[in-house]
Length: 387
Picture 1 (tube, rainbow, N blue to C red):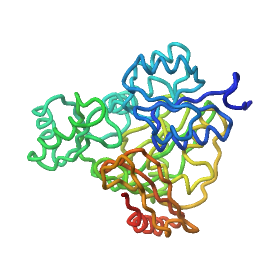
Picture 2: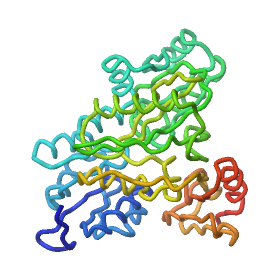
Picture 3: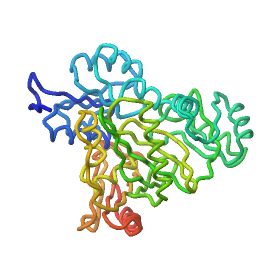
């Protein structure tokens, strides 16, 4: 493959649609190969804006506004990095000859829980928990009664766990309804899922180019309010469950097609594997790969997009802990204790321009045997505060 310099007439261009902390790492990897980078998001000074060659602020649901930027910049690769985005713009861009990663249809399926669940369960015959789709609070109650309590309720379209809740009884239904309707994205339709009696859940990071598919070591994670707070790699699981997880991840990513890295979320019960969700982009739980692998999930994503070889070395066990804001601030300061910078740990600060309660502002990373790394990450994250 030939590499050129950025800001030239023959430069290769990558455009990110969505410019958060995950996109920032992708931009950095692209710049290491001399690729020109453009970062687009709904607000100014998003994390990836800080490191991209150019940045734009636009309503990400505005089809014509997004297409105007695409047509002006003429990127070689368009990488959607968020769910709340105009899918019509991506289909039109693809129709006009632009390369959407992995492809517009895959993005459309995965950004909508109804589309991806029916695709996985009904088209690919993957094992999933029982589910129903509803549009009213009365319909939600009826579905919950049918599926049983507890049950999980999510908008069909949202991001970072927004709008997700667990209803443990009929008394929780009104609150779950309100929670879902206030989510980012499209909350006009909801999915009610039977609670899968799983032992644990994993993310199987799966990278595919035109020639091969590779898997990272499975990542275990802990979630609160639908959003990740701790992750560790590798997740402890049987060889059979790991093999089945890789097989399921390959089926869903082959079905979606295209090139890039996918975060495949799975429920594990003994040796049985259930499909949950998939994101056609780097996954937040995968930030742990910044310390455990020779090629992080972000580097693998870029390699896969470019069609480069996907080989990498797993250095060893590690864990990550997300730091979430406790304050509301238009000039947030993240106060990090010196002890987080050690021979086996460090912090990545995302430099978001505003803090809101529950917003992820940094991540602590630890390299050690899984149990020790996770224990250390739980202690270290307590030593980060925001002002």
